[in-house]
Image (cartoon, rainbow, N blue to C red; front, top):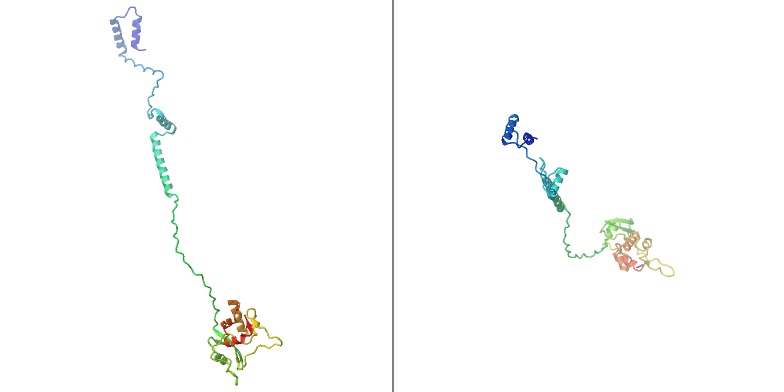
Length: 276
């Protein structure tokens, strides 16, 4: 209660209505005693009507979020996370940029399927079938002959390749005096495994009593049986066996002419004694 209220209450309790001079005199006395009083403070604003929402004044340092869903989201971010809305937007932009870079890196580094053009068929090359040619056996560097009969040193003689009958007689010490060499062709080249008879007639087939001996089969004869034939010997018998092994079974006696060591004369001797 201020001084003006006290004065007014006194005026009301006094008898009779206060006159204007008395009220003015009282105010002057009060002013002289207490000094000039301050004007009365304004009354607070009346409360808003029911149903209306009163907006609170913003606190210092707290941003204004506004109304609506956006304002509530901004207020929730600030209260719960301590982040402003623009900070969240900046983080979202950075996150989207990082996701875009990651997707670009993945897309550019993915495995790709390369389409290879179909091969162009090359022209067919006809390769002739290989022809199997039987290789000849290794030719010896020399010839081995059997010089028998009337010579100084009969036996096996090793002579250079291309030697002749005369060379074989010289290697055997020459014919003995009185030996007949007219049946020999001294200029004939020697064949490996050949037997040269000097001064002796060609051996005749062994005579048998009763029926004649059947010719020997070249396809089933053993080396010992071939060796027993006249003018063959062990070396020529082995040549016949080797020829049969390399070329198969004999089909004709003329194939004997292909064996080294069998000349026309020896073939004539063997022809009645053997058969394919």
